[in-house]
Length: 200
Length: 200
Image (cartoon, rainbow over all chains, first blue to last red; front, top):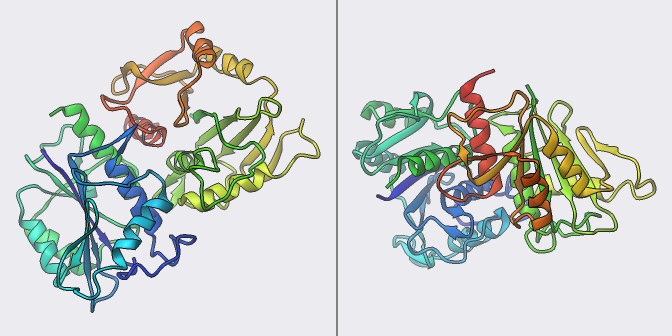
């Protein structure tokens, strides 16, 4: 089973034009994205090879882009925010000569176009594994989860109404990790732990 | 109920002499300490005021120090590693004119001496709330927890045998968060979630 996460990133510059010294500001909260990546992949002394995370970068409506990190191929990932951000920033700086093609910028990191972000979200919402991590969802513990779950999270900015609409219209199942509203990076850790405890 | 965490930090420079651009290397894995701080305190749009974390900085046997972050008084904390590290680094740079006194370097951050690190660990081990987060412990879910729990974690470096000895000799109860070995920052998130679900 592959564990998939999908994150809508509302303010990260699509061309990677931000400074590593100010991931929260100039990076459009890339600090939280880096922590999400770390939570998706990092275990003690290793990488979760069975996991993947996709980011929809929608800050620039002219050039929305998709970034995918694939655990089975991933190299050069360290747990810290700065080096993680540098790795993705490097990828975002590339591919502008052929913006219509997805390329693997370093092993396991794919950067490509996302011509229709809401269409892609609707596509996600239609897949049988779609799960929306949402405060008003059913409790994660004991919840019935699809065979190949794919968990949608937001970055620190809420989903916009049209994004929420895509998910609501499709009736995506909602799951909640607990009574407190938590950053997405912490939610990822809680989802992994639940799946770890359920076993293979 | 206050939620307390205690972390032995083996390599963080006690005087804060590290660069924010290399928290993992020059900071002695301060990147992970910053993530621990973030996991202890950060919830969506707020701070866990009922939580505290203490670090035993033992890298320099001549000047071991203790850093305490107290949620009820904490100010200026942001979720990202860099600004968190800057806040603590600032505290570690101060107090050298009176190294025998604990001072509040910014609201909610206390820096002071730790004359006898192993004695302090033995003292922790003797308290009724002591819990050792350990891979071979009893499962966290369903575990009986003390009234005022205080959770011991290590930084990315294992406890040394004499430190382990303090805990074993006192028979500190061990709790495990799950089947995977995880960074301490992720363990903190799992502990908080368990306590959140159990309610006040």
